[in-house]
Image 1: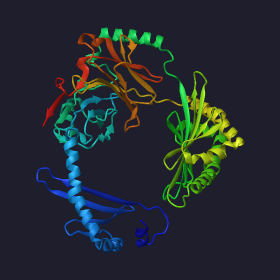
Image 2: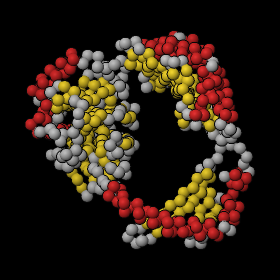
Image 3: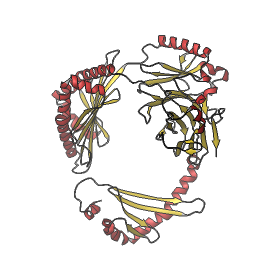
Image 4: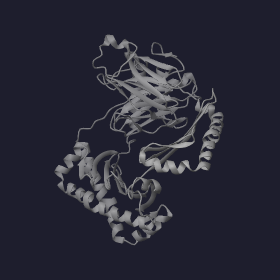
Length: 530
């Protein structure tokens, strides 16, 4: 790195050197192709030519390096041996050991979902493996791009993947629906084709035929009535205020100091010293600053004066303590509090991270700092003796933070709230695999999902997944129910419940006729083509 910097006439600054080594083996022909290439500061620099056993300069500044390395014949022969012999030997060993796992292919469950009558129809595939797949919409057998939004491939909790493709139907007449279909293609696997058919779309703005006869609805309404009586207050009304602050040294093109303010997981404000930015990110946050100008003054002082100076001094002190002079250094701090609106309980926290590792944490109960690594002991001892600083910290976490949080929640509640109910589907990969109750498209992300039997919540045989973000700022989650011990006669005793904070519950009965799966074909829904 030092030599290359001299070749480029560079002295200070941030620089990156990358090296890629590897080989490719054709199992059919036995041919082996090796590769060694260096990149510098994001550009190709120099590459090894195995045929001539010389280096190729990929830019003029690499010529000096090429001349030096071409003269090192012993090293060149070592590189050649590694790429032609060692690397393919390792590759064959790994391939033979992990062949079955690497060749594993799992087809997804594919559903059509829609939030409202005018919203796009989402073709959602979940549970596939590996993550090399594409999904698209066709009209009359031809792929279409207009009015189609393709989502990213996202990971599930069980090492499988999911993705979706949304089709706007505003310009599609009912007579033309049959001309459209969604195609899912898994690398090396068969295609799954799902026709645009109104009868199979999962949505909550109208009833689904297979799950909505009067007897079931009467039973569900009665269960919901008792659930509300028994589980009143099941949503703990907790709110959070968090400041995510980052300071840096030696990083080009990145702000020296920046911060993000989050309320209940939603970004409320943003600060950037280098760009002189201090701005609210929500309409209700703008109202706060208009009606409480003292808030704006406080944040201006914190963003542009107080905190940048503090972070500069602390980074400088830590660099001296760690005997660091140059290079990139990152200091992060997370401050905040959580307030239980029901009980009034307040929990505060402050934690520092240095260069990507936990560093210091404040113990609010004891009023002392906790060193999270040995190198933090010096800072801990120094800050523990600063009783005035500790009192300020305690005051910030137990008084100022919750006061601000209550004010922000009050304004957030007074602002028109957007709540979006999800589409809920039952999915299953194989006859013996769990039945997944999958909810996607809900907002906000304060939601719970669980399975019940005879109206009582189940825990045994149930796996609750995390809440994951979608590409359209909504969220998704799932709850898996193991059915290995469930007899067919008892299926009707089980249901899945989705609860959105402040919204109505969505109850889906365990009904074989509505489960989406690829190990059997629903009538007139999905065809497989190879």
